[in-house]
Image 1 (tube, one colour):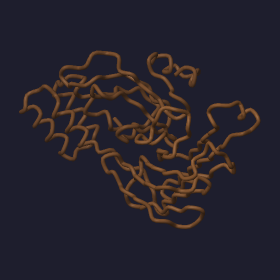
Image 2 (cartoon, one colour; image 1 turned 135 degrees about the vertical axis):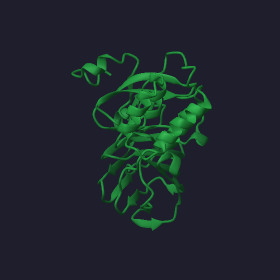
Image 3 (cartoon, rainbow, N blue to C red; image 1 turned 90 degrees about the vertical axis):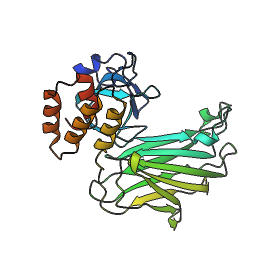
Image 4 (tube, rainbow, N blue to C red; image 1 turned 180 degrees about the vertical axis):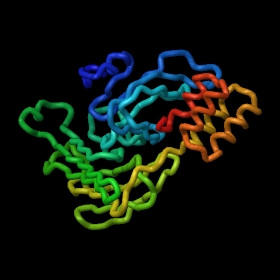
Length: 287
């Protein structure tokens, strides 16, 4: 972290945490699982800004130290607001150097973003003579207004590029009030759209699109960041916690009481619960 933030003291306090490329931040969990919670835990640092859990879509505000709790099959992997991740579609991954016919593109709300996808034949040195293709992906975020993603393929005729390409877009950190509009080469087309409430994301699939044609996805309305499903997270923590059922019920009644998060936090602290349990319950809040 101190390579990316050499002037920040906190960057030197998280030796296992690291930046993964330009878009992701990873916090490995290297300590034993907490028996009371059946969860692993890591203390990490969030630089200033907004971040999203890559797997769940939970949103975190930065400029603070934070304890994060995860089951055995996950660690915290965070994408910054405005991040664009281009992945080979999971069902299409094969060994070899061929450029994929199916791409998964994840876009994270909250800020403008850009990404240039570079492709060449993967075998020769012809790229040194400019034989390559760069697809420009641009995302414009306007809090409370419309936002758009544009994908502009490079003007390259090359045998190493697929003739047609399928796109699987996932827009993370979006509410469901405004449905997306998809355009290919300037013309509105139908697409398979689905809102994934548990991941705070729009899922959009385009099948067999000419690789040469630009794609635009518009959210033409008042877009805003959704609130975390805090209670759903807290219910999972309580379900796995090794504490008495009467105490679980007492905690749950407090969580659904409608009190402010600061009041909930102080009450949990006064109940003399373990620091691990309190921190896990409050992780997705702004406390």
